[in-house]
Image (cartoon, rainbow, N blue to C red; front, side, top):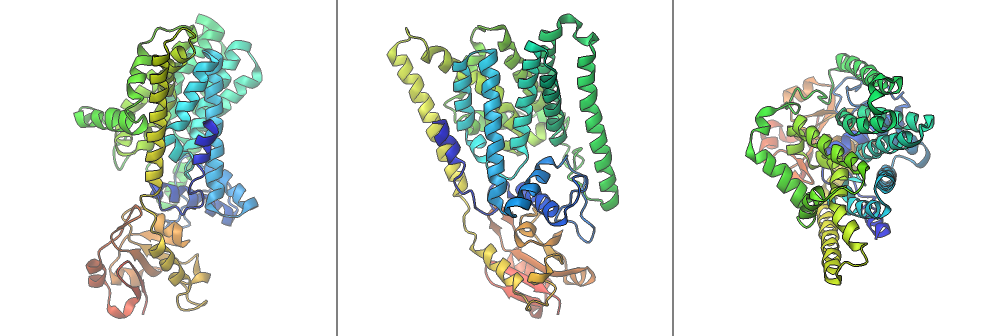
Length: 476
């Protein structure tokens, strides 16, 4: 079943980045492609929505994008290369989670945890997206697993691997600092009450904080140079420490019931999570997952807006919840004296969950598959005015406007750089852009303007392409 679940991630492996969360995938894939095309250092990430700047942007540490770029150097800049890389990283996260649960609790619990973890709709979908989340999940699981090994044996290699994984996770996203709570338990297992007096604990914490300081201070200099930023500190939407959001009942309904219970765990496994939390602990190290669960709840409180808006913000929460959901299955399905009827009900519940989760995944993948307008727009732009036209095929470094309400997906798909927005004709002429390119209405998670808006802004002779679906405006 695990083989089949991982095989499902290859469905649509070569599809364009015009699916769910295409805006963020396009940012990630665009940065990777820019690394590949320029050969820049990892310290100089560039975005497509650069305007007339060099495109250097303040962002989280782009290790995922840079790794994809190195794969592009070998296999070519094809999206399926990045998707397969993400699938491999998720498989690594599943393996590390299995080893952690199997070694701290039991192999049976590890197996059912991994099965549930691999079957969720969101882990199935996001495991094959061009996003750093699979690397984040793998590095977070690695930080815990290798420190668990260090807690048992005191191995220097395990200590270094755990430290490297946590540094990597926190550089990808600052939020994995919440792992400090379960990590403290592992340090306590190794050093007892003297853990705050040993240098290993302080060196561990200091290395993570120094790594964060070095990268984010450097990233701030990129923002100062170009005024381009991903808004790491939540300036635009107040995604951190937003207590007014936490006080809203709708927030808790959306995250706990609509997202976690209904979407992530298909309602079927939600009662099993509660059941697993209430079950008697059979091993002292089960407290590790209790603390991990408390830590992700703290993460939810500290980043409420992001969790309310995007379902992938709950990805770090899924691993400990899968452990709780798996406990009833591991304990009762492996009991020789358990009634057959009870075992049958448990197996049926698990099968129904897997079926619903994979149906939701396929439905998500097939929801928006009309790529013809984008393909026609791309071909027409490449062929525009022959080979010597600045907006044509030889002008992929030329600048264009794409009115897509904040998403860089069209810039990425067209392989162009420029601005996201709908300028007036005078603004267009006074800029360095060579074209305004767009789609009408809502298409594949891209929101474009209406035909009436576009016709009102530009003279008829400026349209190089205008139909019911797409348009191109050039200088005349």
